[in-house]
Length: 429
Ligand code: SDX
Image 1 (cartoon, rainbow, N blue to C red):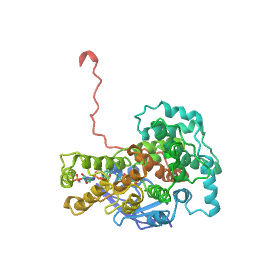
Image 2: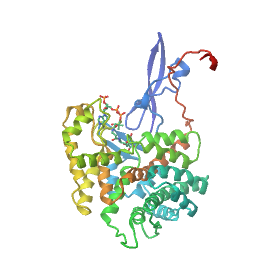
Image 3: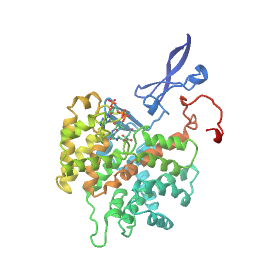
Image 4: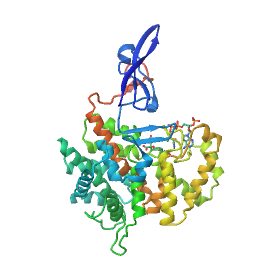
């Protein structure tokens, strides 16, 4: 299993022929190994956005963009969403196999034991301006964790680091919400599960005790499972690139959070709800929205649509769409934004522009509807994505640290600037 070196390809430059090995992955995907290209030919490759470039080999997640396939450690996302929990899926991503009951329970205890945030960090939250975006707070606070929890080095302890991060990021997300509202924080409880604790820390109040609803807890587990990992996406690539300098785990994850914040990446879930809200509030017609999305002169894009890898329906969006109906019927009743989203999807999927460009709903198109129904504020949607993606980032960071062939990331470039010329004294300019 895993990568096999077989066959080769030849490249002819200026009449000289070079041979490069071909690597074939578990699912038959092929790569030309060009690690010796510059050394042998003096040429580099040119691939802005790395759409055709593999940065590593990995055994964590597999996607087939043409068929809409997503598997974590070989297990289809549909089965994990139906049968697993976020804590179990996090274990699978990081350790490479599903946990035994004993391993799962040990993880639960360690997550609970790590769920408090150092009291001296509370003052950090109090000093962020009230309007600060939760992603900026989270990225800063994760970096700051390193000062309070010096990285544990040996094998056993590195697991404690991972669980420390997974547990504290969840607590800090709830804390930042409470501080933003000027409300006392709610401490985690040892008798609640990971997702129950998050909801309780977010919404429990002395005037109205939060009542946990199993369907909402399940919806949150599924949301986090669906965001667990996704191969070498923008933020995971950032974690690997920053980690390749051998910086500590917290700093690498903080870089991943910053990369995820962008509206073209994890920030899209917030942008989708803002787009749907704008359409609803201003009574913009579906046709007008689709027309703007197709207009090359208009910067507007249909947020939550399109994907670098998926050229068919994102399998996570399918699951999320189903969950919308279930969660809404249970909690808040019909949501006009869901109706608008469904109408947009229906029109887009029959429109030649979207069909020709292979633009389908991605994970962010429906996820915001679910989070809204649960009561998560819009500006925290990407934080929720980050909580889900944390085990993926950690597993990718761990895999890169354990890779004997891993080197510091240092891409090359094609220079297009001025040729050499002399410095001109200020008096002569
Ligand atoms: C995530 O990589 C991952 O795995 C990411 C992610 C994960 O789990 O980590 O799946 C999470 O980031 C999902 C994507 C969330 N972003 C959005 O929903 C934002 C809207 N979508 C896009 O901006 C875009 O589709 C991207 C950024 C997702 C993908 O961009 P690409 O692959 O670089 O494609 P592109 O921008 O070059 O677009 C190709 C063509 C262009 O038209 P042409 O110039 O070729 O005629 O498709 C058009 C684009 O204009 N296009 C869109 C569009 N997305 C692409 N046109 C209108 N609306 C859109 N949403």
